[in-house]
Image 1 (spheres, helix red, strand yellow):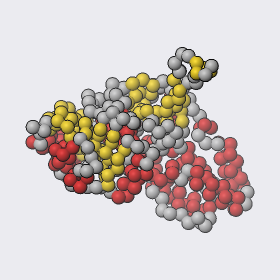
Image 2 (tube, rainbow, N blue to C red):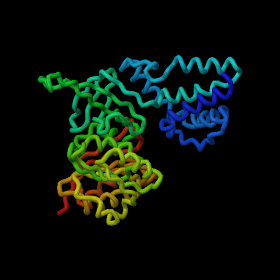
Image 3 (cartoon, rainbow, N blue to C red):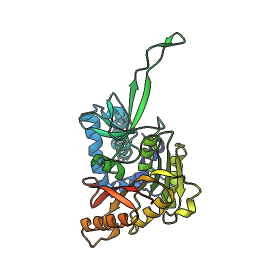
Image 4 (spheres, helix red, strand yellow):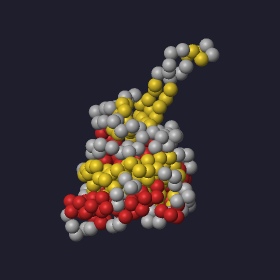
Length: 357
Protein backbone atom coordinates (compact mmCIF):
# COMPACT_ATOMS: atom_id res chain seq x y z
CA UNK A 1 0.00 0.00 0.00
CA UNK A 2 1.60 3.28 -1.12
CA UNK A 3 1.16 6.63 0.55
CA UNK A 4 -1.64 7.78 -1.78
CA UNK A 5 -3.75 4.68 -1.09
CA UNK A 6 -3.18 5.06 2.63
CA UNK A 7 -4.15 8.72 2.43
CA UNK A 8 -7.38 7.86 0.58
CA UNK A 9 -8.32 5.18 3.08
CA UNK A 10 -7.55 7.51 5.98
CA UNK A 11 -9.66 10.31 4.53
CA UNK A 12 -12.62 8.00 3.88
CA UNK A 13 -12.49 6.58 7.39
CA UNK A 14 -12.08 10.05 8.89
CA UNK A 15 -15.17 11.32 7.06
CA UNK A 16 -17.27 8.33 8.13
CA UNK A 17 -16.57 8.88 11.83
CA UNK A 18 -16.25 12.66 11.91
CA UNK A 19 -19.31 13.10 14.09
CA UNK A 20 -18.03 10.47 16.52
CA UNK A 21 -14.72 12.33 16.97
CA UNK A 22 -16.26 15.67 17.98
CA UNK A 23 -15.83 14.88 21.65
CA UNK A 24 -12.07 15.07 21.13
CA UNK A 25 -12.27 18.82 20.41
CA UNK A 26 -9.59 18.41 17.74
CA UNK A 27 -8.25 21.42 15.82
CA UNK A 28 -9.21 21.78 12.19
CA UNK A 29 -7.19 19.51 9.91
CA UNK A 30 -6.29 20.71 6.44
CA UNK A 31 -7.65 18.40 3.77
CA UNK A 32 -4.25 18.35 2.05
CA UNK A 33 -2.42 17.23 5.20
CA UNK A 34 -0.58 13.95 4.88
CA UNK A 35 -1.49 10.80 6.80
CA UNK A 36 1.17 11.20 9.47
CA UNK A 37 0.08 14.75 10.28
CA UNK A 38 -3.53 13.66 10.63
CA UNK A 39 -2.49 10.72 12.79
CA UNK A 40 -0.45 12.95 15.09
CA UNK A 41 -3.42 15.26 15.63
CA UNK A 42 -5.70 12.35 16.51
CA UNK A 43 -3.05 10.80 18.73
CA UNK A 44 -2.63 14.05 20.68
CA UNK A 45 -6.38 14.26 21.15
CA UNK A 46 -6.56 10.70 22.40
CA UNK A 47 -3.78 11.27 24.91
CA UNK A 48 -5.46 14.45 26.15
CA UNK A 49 -8.70 12.64 27.04
CA UNK A 50 -7.37 9.20 27.96
CA UNK A 51 -8.68 9.46 31.53
CA UNK A 52 -12.21 10.22 30.34
CA UNK A 53 -12.19 7.58 27.62
CA UNK A 54 -10.97 4.79 29.90
CA UNK A 55 -14.13 4.61 32.02
CA UNK A 56 -16.43 4.80 29.00
CA UNK A 57 -14.42 2.21 27.06
CA UNK A 58 -14.60 -0.25 29.95
CA UNK A 59 -18.34 0.24 30.14
CA UNK A 60 -18.78 -0.31 26.40
CA UNK A 61 -16.70 -3.48 26.42
CA UNK A 62 -18.53 -4.91 29.41
CA UNK A 63 -21.95 -4.20 27.95
CA UNK A 64 -21.16 -5.48 24.47
CA UNK A 65 -19.12 -8.58 25.18
CA UNK A 66 -20.53 -9.79 28.51
CA UNK A 67 -24.06 -8.50 28.93
CA UNK A 68 -25.20 -8.30 25.33
CA UNK A 69 -22.98 -10.81 23.57
CA UNK A 70 -22.12 -8.45 20.76
CA UNK A 71 -18.59 -8.91 19.46
CA UNK A 72 -16.31 -6.29 18.05
CA UNK A 73 -16.97 -7.66 14.58
CA UNK A 74 -20.45 -6.10 14.72
CA UNK A 75 -19.01 -2.64 15.23
CA UNK A 76 -15.79 -2.58 13.24
CA UNK A 77 -14.68 -4.51 10.21
CA UNK A 78 -11.85 -6.14 12.15
CA UNK A 79 -10.40 -8.04 9.23
CA UNK A 80 -10.18 -4.94 7.08
CA UNK A 81 -8.61 -3.03 9.96
CA UNK A 82 -5.99 -5.73 10.55
CA UNK A 83 -5.11 -5.88 6.85
CA UNK A 84 -4.66 -2.12 6.70
CA UNK A 85 -2.53 -2.12 9.84
CA UNK A 86 -0.44 -5.08 8.67
CA UNK A 87 0.30 -3.50 5.30
CA UNK A 88 1.20 -0.24 6.99
CA UNK A 89 3.66 -1.96 9.32
CA UNK A 90 5.14 -3.99 6.46
CA UNK A 91 5.88 -0.81 4.54
CA UNK A 92 7.52 0.75 7.59
CA UNK A 93 4.74 3.29 8.10
CA UNK A 94 3.18 4.00 11.48
CA UNK A 95 -0.22 2.28 11.84
CA UNK A 96 -2.15 5.53 11.84
CA UNK A 97 -5.41 3.94 10.72
CA UNK A 98 -5.55 1.94 13.93
CA UNK A 99 -6.07 5.21 15.83
CA UNK A 100 -9.19 5.95 13.83
CA UNK A 101 -10.43 2.37 14.09
CA UNK A 102 -9.90 2.25 17.86
CA UNK A 103 -11.76 5.48 18.38
CA UNK A 104 -14.54 4.31 16.06
CA UNK A 105 -14.86 1.06 18.00
CA UNK A 106 -15.40 2.73 21.36
CA UNK A 107 -17.69 5.54 20.17
CA UNK A 108 -19.65 4.05 17.27
CA UNK A 109 -23.39 4.39 17.15
CA UNK A 110 -24.26 0.75 17.25
CA UNK A 111 -27.71 -0.80 17.42
CA UNK A 112 -28.19 -3.67 19.84
CA UNK A 113 -31.05 -6.14 19.48
CA UNK A 114 -32.75 -8.87 21.46
CA UNK A 115 -32.70 -7.08 24.84
CA UNK A 116 -35.91 -7.07 26.90
CA UNK A 117 -37.20 -3.73 28.19
CA UNK A 118 -39.65 -3.03 30.96
CA UNK A 119 -41.20 0.26 32.12
CA UNK A 120 -39.49 2.18 34.89
CA UNK A 121 -41.64 3.61 37.69
CA UNK A 122 -41.18 7.05 36.11
CA UNK A 123 -43.46 7.21 33.03
CA UNK A 124 -41.54 7.53 29.79
CA UNK A 125 -38.40 5.78 31.05
CA UNK A 126 -37.52 2.12 30.76
CA UNK A 127 -35.04 -0.47 32.02
CA UNK A 128 -33.15 -2.65 29.55
CA UNK A 129 -32.56 -5.95 31.31
CA UNK A 130 -29.27 -7.79 30.99
CA UNK A 131 -26.25 -8.72 33.05
CA UNK A 132 -25.92 -4.96 33.59
CA UNK A 133 -29.30 -3.20 33.55
CA UNK A 134 -29.44 0.10 31.63
CA UNK A 135 -31.72 3.10 31.85
CA UNK A 136 -33.22 3.84 28.42
CA UNK A 137 -35.81 6.10 26.78
CA UNK A 138 -37.86 5.35 23.70
CA UNK A 139 -36.28 7.09 20.73
CA UNK A 140 -38.52 9.80 19.32
CA UNK A 141 -36.52 9.73 16.07
CA UNK A 142 -35.67 6.06 15.35
CA UNK A 143 -32.45 5.55 13.46
CA UNK A 144 -30.77 8.66 14.86
CA UNK A 145 -28.41 9.06 17.81
CA UNK A 146 -27.78 12.44 19.44
CA UNK A 147 -24.38 12.13 21.15
CA UNK A 148 -23.11 8.71 20.08
CA UNK A 149 -25.18 6.79 22.64
CA UNK A 150 -26.02 3.11 22.24
CA UNK A 151 -29.38 2.26 20.73
CA UNK A 152 -31.45 -0.85 21.35
CA UNK A 153 -33.90 -2.11 18.76
CA UNK A 154 -36.66 -4.54 19.65
CA UNK A 155 -39.65 -5.98 17.83
CA UNK A 156 -43.19 -5.91 19.20
CA UNK A 157 -45.62 -8.51 17.89
CA UNK A 158 -48.45 -7.00 15.89
CA UNK A 159 -52.07 -7.48 16.82
CA UNK A 160 -53.71 -10.68 15.49
CA UNK A 161 -55.39 -10.23 12.16
CA UNK A 162 -54.60 -9.60 8.55
CA UNK A 163 -54.25 -6.52 6.43
CA UNK A 164 -55.22 -6.90 2.76
CA UNK A 165 -54.95 -10.62 3.15
CA UNK A 166 -51.47 -10.44 4.68
CA UNK A 167 -50.34 -10.78 8.27
CA UNK A 168 -49.25 -7.43 9.66
CA UNK A 169 -45.47 -7.32 10.26
CA UNK A 170 -43.97 -6.87 13.70
CA UNK A 171 -43.38 -3.30 14.82
CA UNK A 172 -39.82 -2.21 15.59
CA UNK A 173 -39.21 0.05 18.58
CA UNK A 174 -35.88 1.74 19.27
CA UNK A 175 -34.56 2.80 22.68
CA UNK A 176 -31.59 5.02 23.57
CA UNK A 177 -29.28 4.21 26.48
CA UNK A 178 -29.18 7.07 29.00
CA UNK A 179 -25.71 7.50 30.49
CA UNK A 180 -25.92 8.77 34.12
CA UNK A 181 -22.31 9.97 33.95
CA UNK A 182 -23.33 12.48 31.28
CA UNK A 183 -26.75 13.49 32.58
CA UNK A 184 -27.71 14.87 36.00
CA UNK A 185 -31.32 13.85 35.47
CA UNK A 186 -30.36 10.25 34.68
CA UNK A 187 -28.11 10.23 37.76
CA UNK A 188 -31.05 11.43 39.86
CA UNK A 189 -33.36 8.74 38.48
CA UNK A 190 -30.84 5.98 39.15
CA UNK A 191 -30.15 7.58 42.54
CA UNK A 192 -33.75 6.81 43.51
CA UNK A 193 -35.54 10.15 43.30
CA UNK A 194 -39.26 9.66 43.94
CA UNK A 195 -40.70 12.12 41.42
CA UNK A 196 -39.36 13.77 38.27
CA UNK A 197 -42.60 15.68 37.51
CA UNK A 198 -42.46 14.89 33.80
CA UNK A 199 -44.29 12.26 31.78
CA UNK A 200 -45.62 11.78 28.25
CA UNK A 201 -47.48 14.90 27.21
CA UNK A 202 -45.83 17.20 29.78
CA UNK A 203 -44.46 20.67 29.07
CA UNK A 204 -40.99 21.11 30.54
CA UNK A 205 -38.79 24.20 30.91
CA UNK A 206 -35.15 23.08 30.89
CA UNK A 207 -32.68 25.68 32.18
CA UNK A 208 -29.05 25.03 31.27
CA UNK A 209 -29.68 22.85 28.23
CA UNK A 210 -26.03 22.88 27.02
CA UNK A 211 -25.70 20.95 23.75
CA UNK A 212 -28.83 18.91 24.37
CA UNK A 213 -27.62 15.58 25.76
CA UNK A 214 -30.19 15.38 28.57
CA UNK A 215 -32.71 17.50 26.69
CA UNK A 216 -32.93 14.82 24.00
CA UNK A 217 -33.91 12.21 26.59
CA UNK A 218 -36.49 14.57 28.11
CA UNK A 219 -37.80 14.94 24.56
CA UNK A 220 -38.17 11.14 24.43
CA UNK A 221 -39.98 11.13 27.78
CA UNK A 222 -42.60 13.78 26.96
CA UNK A 223 -43.11 12.34 23.49
CA UNK A 224 -44.73 13.97 20.45
CA UNK A 225 -47.59 15.40 22.55
CA UNK A 226 -45.24 17.17 24.97
CA UNK A 227 -42.92 20.16 24.65
CA UNK A 228 -39.43 20.95 25.95
CA UNK A 229 -38.42 24.61 26.17
CA UNK A 230 -34.62 24.39 26.28
CA UNK A 231 -32.80 27.53 27.48
CA UNK A 232 -29.05 27.84 26.98
CA UNK A 233 -26.88 30.95 27.27
CA UNK A 234 -23.71 29.74 25.47
CA UNK A 235 -23.83 30.34 21.73
CA UNK A 236 -21.35 27.54 21.10
CA UNK A 237 -23.49 24.96 22.87
CA UNK A 238 -26.58 26.64 21.47
CA UNK A 239 -25.55 25.77 17.91
CA UNK A 240 -25.43 22.09 18.80
CA UNK A 241 -28.76 22.41 20.61
CA UNK A 242 -30.41 24.00 17.57
CA UNK A 243 -29.00 21.35 15.24
CA UNK A 244 -30.38 18.62 17.48
CA UNK A 245 -33.77 20.34 17.73
CA UNK A 246 -34.17 20.36 13.94
CA UNK A 247 -34.77 16.60 14.15
CA UNK A 248 -37.04 16.77 17.21
CA UNK A 249 -40.11 18.95 16.71
CA UNK A 250 -41.08 18.89 20.40
CA UNK A 251 -37.94 20.86 21.41
CA UNK A 252 -37.96 24.67 21.29
CA UNK A 253 -34.36 25.92 21.66
CA UNK A 254 -33.94 29.33 23.29
CA UNK A 255 -30.48 30.89 23.23
CA UNK A 256 -30.82 33.40 26.04
CA UNK A 257 -29.70 34.12 29.60
CA UNK A 258 -31.99 32.37 32.10
CA UNK A 259 -31.48 35.37 34.43
CA UNK A 260 -33.73 37.39 32.09
CA UNK A 261 -36.84 35.27 31.53
CA UNK A 262 -38.80 38.30 30.29
CA UNK A 263 -36.71 38.20 27.11
CA UNK A 264 -38.26 34.86 26.11
CA UNK A 265 -41.66 35.20 27.74
CA UNK A 266 -43.39 35.14 24.32
CA UNK A 267 -41.79 31.79 23.46
CA UNK A 268 -42.62 29.82 26.60
CA UNK A 269 -46.10 28.78 27.69
CA UNK A 270 -47.12 27.67 31.18
CA UNK A 271 -45.22 24.50 32.00
CA UNK A 272 -45.73 21.49 34.25
CA UNK A 273 -42.12 21.16 35.36
CA UNK A 274 -38.83 23.04 35.52
CA UNK A 275 -35.48 21.29 35.45
CA UNK A 276 -32.49 23.47 36.29
CA UNK A 277 -28.80 22.70 35.80
CA UNK A 278 -27.28 26.17 35.48
CA UNK A 279 -24.44 25.80 38.04
CA UNK A 280 -24.44 29.48 39.09
CA UNK A 281 -24.09 31.06 42.57
CA UNK A 282 -27.56 32.63 42.21
CA UNK A 283 -29.16 29.46 40.91
CA UNK A 284 -32.07 29.55 43.37
CA UNK A 285 -32.97 33.10 42.29
CA UNK A 286 -32.77 32.14 38.59
CA UNK A 287 -35.12 29.20 39.10
CA UNK A 288 -37.51 31.31 41.16
CA UNK A 289 -37.80 34.04 38.51
CA UNK A 290 -38.63 31.48 35.84
CA UNK A 291 -41.05 29.64 38.12
CA UNK A 292 -42.98 32.84 38.93
CA UNK A 293 -43.49 33.47 35.21
CA UNK A 294 -43.97 30.06 33.67
CA UNK A 295 -44.67 27.32 36.24
CA UNK A 296 -48.21 26.22 37.07
CA UNK A 297 -49.34 26.23 40.68
CA UNK A 298 -48.53 22.80 42.05
CA UNK A 299 -45.94 22.23 39.34
CA UNK A 300 -42.68 20.43 40.00
CA UNK A 301 -39.11 21.69 40.13
CA UNK A 302 -35.92 19.65 39.91
CA UNK A 303 -32.69 21.48 40.70
CA UNK A 304 -29.22 20.05 40.29
CA UNK A 305 -26.94 21.81 42.79
CA UNK A 306 -23.16 21.82 42.38
CA UNK A 307 -21.64 22.85 45.71
CA UNK A 308 -18.35 24.16 44.27
CA UNK A 309 -20.14 26.58 41.95
CA UNK A 310 -21.97 28.21 44.86
CA UNK A 311 -19.35 28.23 47.63
CA UNK A 312 -16.11 26.32 47.20
CA UNK A 313 -14.95 27.09 50.76
CA UNK A 314 -17.90 25.56 52.65
CA UNK A 315 -18.69 21.87 53.10
CA UNK A 316 -21.16 20.63 50.45
CA UNK A 317 -23.78 19.77 53.11
CA UNK A 318 -23.87 23.38 54.32
CA UNK A 319 -24.18 24.67 50.77
CA UNK A 320 -27.09 22.35 50.04
CA UNK A 321 -28.86 23.36 53.26
CA UNK A 322 -28.53 27.08 52.44
CA UNK A 323 -29.93 26.54 48.96
CA UNK A 324 -32.94 24.70 50.37
CA UNK A 325 -33.64 27.67 52.65
CA UNK A 326 -33.52 30.01 49.65
CA UNK A 327 -35.97 27.80 47.77
CA UNK A 328 -38.41 27.88 50.68
CA UNK A 329 -38.27 31.69 50.69
CA UNK A 330 -39.35 31.67 47.02
CA UNK A 331 -42.53 29.65 47.71
CA UNK A 332 -40.98 26.38 46.61
CA UNK A 333 -41.62 23.53 49.03
CA UNK A 334 -38.77 20.98 49.00
CA UNK A 335 -39.97 17.41 49.04
CA UNK A 336 -36.79 15.46 48.61
CA UNK A 337 -33.02 15.83 48.44
CA UNK A 338 -30.65 13.14 47.16
CA UNK A 339 -26.96 12.97 46.37
CA UNK A 340 -25.83 12.31 42.80
CA UNK A 341 -22.82 10.25 43.83
CA UNK A 342 -21.21 8.10 42.50
CA UNK A 343 -22.06 9.73 39.18
CA UNK A 344 -21.26 13.32 40.21
CA UNK A 345 -19.10 14.46 43.12
CA UNK A 346 -20.44 17.14 45.52
CA UNK A 347 -23.74 17.32 43.67
CA UNK A 348 -27.27 17.09 45.03
CA UNK A 349 -30.70 17.09 43.42
CA UNK A 350 -33.63 18.77 45.14
CA UNK A 351 -37.25 18.12 44.18
CA UNK A 352 -39.75 20.87 45.00
CA UNK A 353 -43.43 21.70 44.51
CA UNK A 354 -44.29 25.27 43.59
CA UNK A 355 -47.04 27.24 45.30
CA UNK A 356 -47.67 30.55 43.57
CA UNK A 357 -49.88 31.93 46.36
